[in-house]
Image 1 (cartoon, one colour):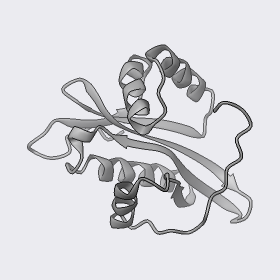
Image 2 (spheres, rainbow, N blue to C red):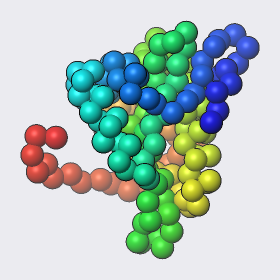
Image 3 (cartoon, rainbow, N blue to C red):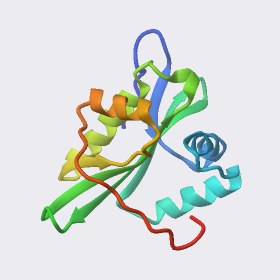
Image 4 (spheres, one colour):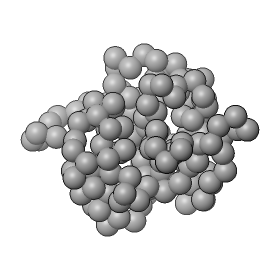
Amino acid sequence: MNTSPTDSNTQVYIRPAVLEDAPGIAALLAALGYPCTPDEAALRLVNLREEPEQQLWIAQEHGEVIAMIAIDIRYYLPLGARTCRITALVVLDEFHGKGIGRRLLREAELKARQAGATRVELTTALHREQAHRFYRACGYENASLRFVKRLGDA
């Protein structure tokens, strides 16, 4: 677990999410466009605990949850290898540009390597051009086109 500060000027810590983080996670999910209540976020955290291949890491400053990254590491049939999928990455707007997103990506990449994954992949909405620039600057490239068919309300 990486709990050291991001740099000497700030006290940002990266750690696994715990149930008490639910209100902060609810705020982050809302910022990402997936609003939920703190109770709903707590239920999602409980459900994540039942999925051994999934991890949720948060960035915290002065006790406040300010960013998170969720990863899912699974065997991927087409590659014949394990792969890591980032299912959520969000940093509160007021903390953009401070290296927190990059640090969360590095944490995910480290966890992926430790689990034997051969690559990290993610998707992002087409309208999130700032996120696209960020991911490209971090060494990620466009590799596929994703299609979605909704089967319910989610």
